[in-house]
Image (cartoon, one colour):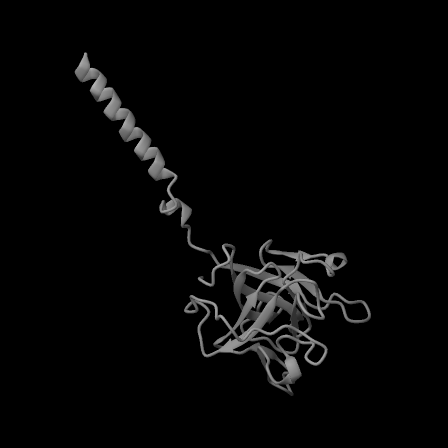
Amino acid sequence: MNKLLIFLAASFILFAVSCSDDNSPNNPADNKPIVSKIVKNLNADTASGGKTWTFFSLSENKEISRKDSATKKWDIAFFKTSIICNSGVRGPGNAAIQLISGTNFADLKTALKEGYFQEDKLNPMAINKSNTEKWYNYSGPPKHVISPKPGYVILLKTADGKYAKLRIISYYKDAPVNPDMKSKARFYTFEYVYQPDGSRKF
């Protein structure tokens, strides 16, 4: 009888340890890799007269209504080729942004600590500030094509203080490989990774 009780007690301890391990923070199920998201055909010229931005939440992966433009619900916004973030003169968030070059999107594993920019009255465009820093090349006549610069990545601190990286894939509807003057412009396709845990690691 004593041997049976000892066996049952040992079995219970092993079961308890096993359950504890399943709930451990080191459990692979709790360390799922961050998956990049693709946004297609985000309309960046919704205005029917005047300038109207298209607001987007990276954490929610969705477009945010213009009526919420004065809130922290959005992180980044687009109008034609211009890009802004939710901070400074643009919104109540704590977002910041920078454009870096010479790196591949997939190879960028850690967001930079410094170099981020928030809009102010002198530099109202986060990416196109002073018209010296752009994410695209413009071909000029006769094609007049906007092409994302290869090796350029947008880094963001989001409105709620998290980190994200983003690369623009296309400025044209349905992301044609070789856009021309007939291609419908101002429809962003982009890829991004959002880190929800607050770290700079992707």
